[in-house]
Amino acid sequence: MKLKSLILGSVAAAGLSTAGFAADLGVLTSLDVCDELGLSGLTISSDTNCLQISGEVKYEFNWGNYNESYAIAMPTALGNVTIDVPSNIAGTSNNDWESRVQSWLKFVGTAGSDFGPAQAVIKLKHDDRVRVRNGGTAIGGFPGVEQRETGSNVVIDEAYVQVGDTTVLTAGKRGSIFNKGDDEPFNFTGLFISSRADTGVIADENAGGFTPKRGGHVIQLWSNIGEGLIAKIGLENLDSGGATGATVLNAATTGNEKAGTLVGVLDYAGSGITAHFSGAVGGILDGVQTAGDTYLIHTGVTATFDAFKVRAALAVGGAYVPANAAYSSYWNGLVSAEAKFDMFKLAVSAEALGARTAAGVDLGTDFGFGASLGATVAEGIEINIGGRYFNDADAGFGDGYQVAAQLIASLTETIKLTGEIGVYGHAADVAPAPVRAAFSDFYGKAELAWTPGGGFSSSVGATVQQNGAYKVTFKAAKAFQ
Image (cartoon, rainbow, N blue to C red):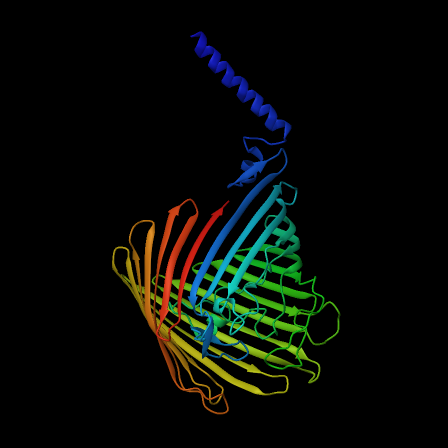
């Protein structure tokens, strides 16, 4: 009994010593402040603040012969949608590979205030990517042995303060409040214009250089009006110095990054409907209408009715060209619908894109459509069959298409196998475009994904193509919060 009493006394003394040490550090092991604020995850609390810590590490490795490309579709002002093509250089390596590590670490310090939770947010980001083409040889490859995309520097991706509950004020460095959702097509292959426009209708800041730059240094305010409606307004891109970049629509249009973008958003969610209206006007700080003054409207709606789902989205934008005292402009619309019938799922989608230069030249209307049929044929086994088509408005440019069949099989609770076979095609290009014969390319790909839990995921996959291109890909990731 004496020995038992001695052991219990030692444990109690150690516990009191640890608690005293934690108190000296200003850390409460009970996390009372975090509980009071309703915060969870990986947290540390003092007597006034709750610190949440979250992060993620992702790794990807690719190897094969795939670094040339062939254009299947060429949407106006967006650039080409391409497939991989192998190189075949005599007397040197044709191997391509890429290794990329992406990571981020986020700290959110929250305390109570008379206006609602007060937060300070810091997010650190690291992106280290190395690509090697044709073995790094000078013939057909990048100069030197490797091409380092972003280097290995750690940057502060976000740093801002925020206060409020139903009405929230934010200031600092962070992403935009501009909502560009409710615009992804439902069919499993997607659409050609949509895939080039960041999966949806055009709101990409790099699309042709004529949409306002957003995010960066910001002052943002949003308020929950009620009945599912939220209103937002912000001044963004306050840190730009007026960098220039010519657009596809008109080479005289420059400076789409000019400082000062006014953003306004209305969001709605309720009764089976999500919808938004987002607007942005760029280059407003100098108060002068010059190159770089840009505008963008993006709106989308998704409605769900029992087994049916319908979606529509529209984007309209442009940039001012002083030489013509006029705006170049574009519009891009998309509609999609999905229906589920017991074991079957049917989806159809359509899209269109038109543009006009400031000189008044109409660039025509590109359009495309797609459809897919999905079926759950057994427990854990799903089949998707579908395709997409693109019609180019430019005379002489051939149309593009893809047809594919996909199998998804859950082998166990943690292992999933995805296989796909299909064909890409492009009709012949004739004058005035560079002459190219009709082209098709059959392909097959498979991926084995493993998610054992704990936030860890990994996969290994391979793609082989009729044209000789091939790629092997390994991925692994772990997130925590």
